[in-house]
Image 1 (cartoon, helix red, strand yellow):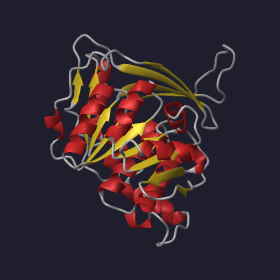
Image 2: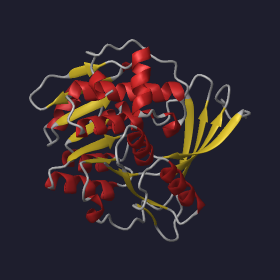
Image 3: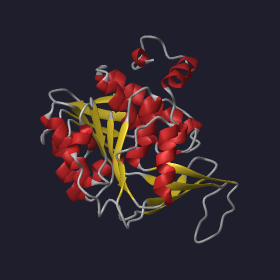
Image 4: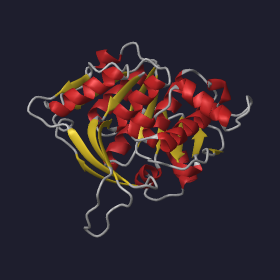
Length: 307
């Protein structure tokens, strides 16, 4: 599996309550963690058993060294996370309260803006390509390569400049929108109508994640379907969508039926929300299987075959 897109360094502060109206808050815990959509997804996919390569652009700085070291610890091949000379990596301040709500302030470094092109030879051998819109030129090159080579591709259609989404959506085989991403791309049209519109552009399937409510999706020639998410007490939702997309791509790449793949992805994201921060909360395959068993999921439940 190849993940293409954004990598960042997250400075995570845990507080009792989010500060309001310019007030200060005392953090009871601080951690520096790897962040960014593609990076989170790469770690999540590796924990679920995939062989993963991350392709992206970062700055010529200590943050990039930190990210590569953490990726190596997770078993993710990071040679494709290349530094752009004279640029800065993306940084984020993530403030999380006791209820799992968060505030995020991002300094998007200039590495992606000044990125050198993606050499598609680094994609050779991929069974699945997962791309996000933060590096639109890289995503477009990867999704085009996947389409030309008959390789499964998934676009993480998070909020981005609308022109970038309009460029990338027709190139992907699967398009997985966040709620805000779909609302932006479809100019506020009802979700089911928007999913149909996405399919008309070329993808074979379009999906929208709905947070605690799970996901809705539609495949070409099929009605809209819905999958609920397991109910959990969220500790932190940062990276939940990235974990969902990674699990979905892994399951689809293993040729599991779509309902099982979506159900498993919902479970992986819910586990992450319950357990921890960013990709640090993503489950291994064994952990997710044990968690589902403890929750009483039957062997015949959607997604059970992936355990």
